Structures are given as structure tokens and as C-alpha cells.
Amino acid sequence: MPSLALGDAKFAFAALFGLGLVVLARWASRTRGSKRDTWVALRIGEVLFTEIVGAFLLGYGLGGLIAPPEAAQVGGPPTRIGPGGRFGGLGTSLPYTLAIVGAALAILTRLDLGAILIRGSGPRRGLSTYVGWDGQVIAPIQAGGYGQITIRDAMGYPLSAGATADTDIPTGTPVRVIGTKGLELVVAPRPPATPTESGET
Image (cartoon, rainbow, N blue to C red; front, side, top):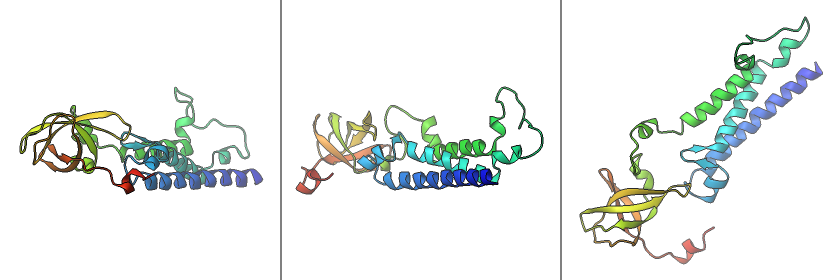
């Protein structure tokens, strides 16, 4: 009985700790590209590594509370749980099964599968996501016409995208995305940094 109580405590702790990591990751990722998003939520593209770990622990803890593995070994002769097979008994262990399912759901709920299937050389998933981001013109934009800009994603990787503007913007000009138009971004010359922005941590 003491061993069962200890096992229950272990799984309860795993579930609570996992839930805490999920909540922490979602809180830290509210501002994409921020230090909290990068170093606490541990964003990798669209997914949050901290959330994946939390979901894994949450599933493991819940699975252990529902069907503790120790329960199958209390009393009676030793028995093998599930077929040996190529996966051994791991796949039939409820804690591990729910842990893997939890991690998979954490990944799938973050991925835009449609965007992955039609991904091009530039950002095509929810262009409104990039409103407020800063970039630089790499192909001149004429007023009402189209050019090319480069921006960096949350991991710092450069992306190129077509852009339009209401005024002429020469190559090399720092710009800010202020909207979208069709499949293009609408940009404007980036205003100089204010004292508040330059002192932001």
C-alpha cells in the first residue's frame, strides 16, 4: 500500500508539473518574438517546446493515476503486460501512451497544416501574423507598386516576401509591416525608435 501511495504521488506531481509547464508556455508565447517567447516558451517555428514537454508529463501523470503500472504487479505470479513484439510492452502502458498522445496534440494544435502543404519561398500562412514586424527592402517599391522585403522570423531566420506601399521606398530602407493586400504585405518606412522602445527589455 505505501508503494501505491508513493506511485500516486509521483504521477500526481507529474500531472501538476506538466499542467504548469503548459500554462507557462502559453503565457510566455503571447508576444511572438519576445524574450519570454524565445527563452521560456522555447518556440521552434510554430510549436512551443515547453508546451510539448508539459503535455507529455501531463499525459503521463494522468495515465498513471488512471491505471498505475504497479497495480499489475501486486500479488500473483509475475506477468508480462502486452505482447513482446517489436515495441515491447511500452505501447500498451497507459501512462506512456497518454504522454505521447499529449505531446502529439501539443504539436498538432500549433501547426498550420494547410500552410505547410502550400508553403512557398515567402510567408504565406496568415499574413496578418506579420503586421507590426520590422524588415528591410531588398527590391525597391514604387508607390502603389510591388517590391520585395526581408523579415526575420521568431528564430531569427530571414524570410523574403512581396510587399507594396503608398510611397516610393528605395532598397535598403528599414520598414514596418502595417497591413496586408491580397497575398502581399503593406509596408511603410519604419519610424525612428522612441526612448521608450529603445529602453525596452
